[in-house]
Image (tube, rainbow, N blue to C red; front, side, top):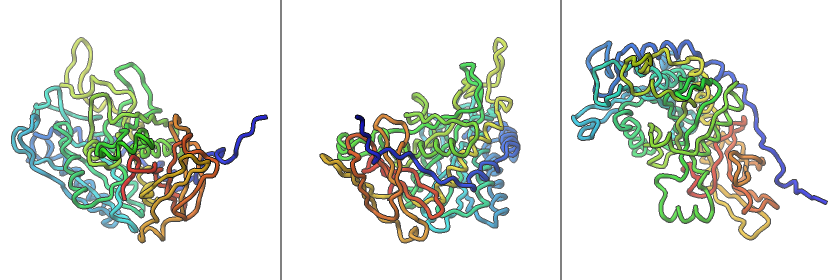
Amino acid sequence: MLIVSMAHAGQVEYHDQARLHAIAAAVQADRIEADITTLVGFGTRHTLSDTVSDTRGIGAARRWIKAEFDKISAACGGCLEVYYQSRVISGTPRIPDAVEVVSVIAVQRGTIDPNRYVIMSGDIDSRVSDIMNFTDDAPGANDNASGVAGTLEAARVLSQYKFAGSIVYAALAGEEQGLFGGRIMAETAQQDGWRIKAVLNNDMIGNITGINGVTDNTTARIFAEGTRMNETEQQARQRRFMGGEVDSPSRNLARFIDWMADRYIPNLDTKVIYRLDRFARGGHHRPFNDLGFPGVRIMETNEHYDRQHQDLRVEDGRHYGDTIDGVDFVYAAKLTALNAVSLAAMAWAPSPPAAVSISGAVSANTTLKWAAASAEEQALISGYRVYWRDTDAPNWQHSRWVGNVTEYTLENVVIDNYFFGVASVSKDGFESPVVFPGPAGAFGE
């Protein structure tokens, strides 16, 4: 006779949120199309291009982006803090002479825990075949006017709500020349003590037809690194014996976003890619990952390389160049909606649990412990949910509501057979990403 313990037979429970459905439905493809059209109209947005003209170059583009954020802020009664963030860069292979790299940042302050941040970003700059060619037209329609347009649209929608934590909308500069905008923002945030819980980098969210001949508007990719870049030797040793290789905060952030797609974005299946970025390539989430912040790249599934980093031309009947006719605006809106619901869910939820630890070696039971919520969040938090899954399962399979406690024991759930985590839950049912025990999975304090 087969006897199965019901101690670990429960499925994941989730409280559906009407507000997130409303946010997803509010994202408009026509507004994204209009913004991409405007950005393409600046001719080139190369980091080294004209900064004086009102109609062409990176300077005109960033001033227009700031003006759009200012309009959004005015419409919500000044709810956004909009500013330029810059640093002079020189002496690098792609910026040999001094150039001011200028990003545009808009911060929507949280009402309960304003120093906790979730960030959505897109890249302002564009390029052609020669990375140093800053004069020829470089429309950058998909790479990456689509990401900037999505960030602006998310700000329009989410600025109509108030959140417990802060949301940041960032149009980052200097990506093609060396990820400088992201590096400047990440370093500044670290210096200022920002508690960043998520960076959603959107880099190419508008193309549905790939170089492989596949046309698909139903899938997207979420790239998420494994072990933390800033892991110490001692932490690496602990991870070797306790696990965590596939449970970095970036991976569990990706799992969270994947769930948001399943629950709130019709006809979209996201693929969590266990890699920092595409093979041997990079994006603006990486500087945040380098400093230990959770961050992922969200993008289309099928890339068309003829439309990336190419001079505008036709050769043997083959069209090259990143022009606006290669962007599917409905698809870009779908990925923007995914960002918006993910940002909103995390900003409405309490901070992910801190100081999560686990014990239960040579025992029938597994015990998880975590720090109590901050004084600021005591009015927000309802309690915690414990999660666990098979060690070869890609996503969490089981959960249990444990109440407003800081310790819980799963009886007859053997620590050797599963991976475990804990999520914070607000009084209206919004959950944080799941936190894996120990430094390998920590989202920070």
